[in-house]
Image (cartoon, rainbow, N blue to C red):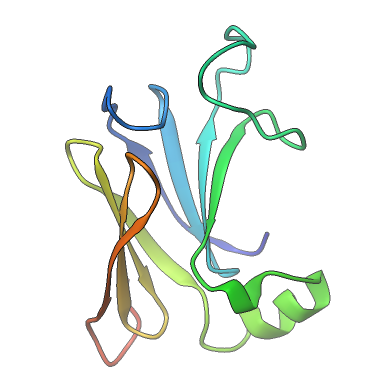
Length: 126
């Protein structure tokens, strides 16, 4: 994981694949991470936990070239790659991220699939 550029609360949506009180971060390593602080809930919950961090629910790798060894990630972080902002929709069904190259990516929070990839700006999206 690299520098975190943005953090937002995700509005609860019963149809979404996330529990209540989830928040989302985006970072310079081009990942979107979903977190939940209530680790005391029933371990048999329908929302799977990450074995390395009980608070981490899910990771979306927006740029597969960023997946790999930490030395490669540090070198790529200093380039123009990485996410700068993230914003969930008010109904908790959709998430939009903006990157350093001016692209917007839209994801469904029902199944975490990418809905759209938009070349929106000539500069980074803040």
